[in-house]
Length: 187
Length: 294
Image 1 (spheres, rainbow over the protein chains, first blue to last red):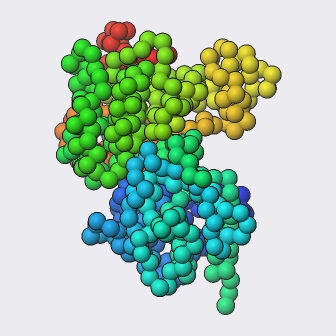
Image 2 (cartoon, each protein chain N blue to C red):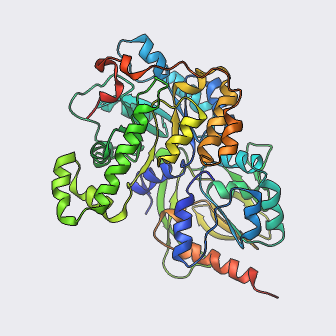
Image 3 (spheres, rainbow over the protein chains, first blue to last red):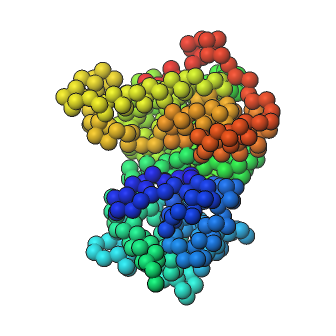
């Protein structure tokens, strides 16, 4: 759809996943996991409703399909957006603040340790990034920048305020692929 | 540990805009219409290119009041234009925290020899280009995003088509060359060797490249995507059309689904009269904005 789709697709292929670009409701039937990329959350939010992806995506997530939202994707997953009455998919027990690090001038890179990701700190690229203001008790915080939550997981739902697809580090995508493999194994 | 204004952050901002439409607006009301229609960013201007053309005289950076009004009215990124080579207009826009600066040939150039050294800035820049040499010269100066120049304010797509086709053909040529031919090619097209070598190795530009300059219908936007653009700028086309809301929505959808021809049929219906447009052969050379800059 709109945003940094190709960058995510490249990373997924490099960690050994097949990639399907989801544009229509029927595309949702063939996937085992979904990435909602960075882009403009207002634009993507409108488009998923317009192309009747909204209900389909929600249902699959509620049924346990792993989903990974980066930046705009983190906003789309949240149950509440500060300063707005309307959320988008509202499947993650988080309250988020948009553009909470300032305008593009203030966008930045920082290496942050992420729990669940072994080894050295992860190169995090923040672009007009949101952050998670508060999260429910089911949500585990994976990374913070100062006081701000910038990565979190709630069961099959993973979200980062930064863009792992813009760095060369594949560990976040590998982690998500593990989530997908875990969930698609028969009980 | 925290780094601002890196290439990755500046180019990354443009990567988030891919498959999207950036619309020219001249006030808060138009900006809200653009945002509601699904624009990924707006370009805040005092006049759209076709009016700049009609008004004549020297076209300069917009009054900061207009840019601030637009910045307050929407949550999507806001871009603004400075004159080619006008370092201070760019600094003013950066001080206002505009999200992206367009060093644009739509305004009257301030410097006939030098473009701005964009590496000095924390805010990212987009620049126009007609061919690969010009594109790589702008990247060498620090541009984080490119667009075709096209011929702004004409509603005529022919120049934008020429520019994207030229760039794509040159990229294919450089990719297929043997490495020992690259220095000669670098000299021939006036492009820095290191950037040419990068294209030879990757087969693509290192920054996002949008279409601009003459997009007047949803089909024009889809055409530019078909030819390999990463997204579309629409200037005069939207708010010079009869029904801007509907037109804006149609361009957004056409850009994202440029190969869904059944959808394009629907999007192209009943849009009212598009902007009238100008046949390029009637434009004198000194009226051609694409000739500005080098």
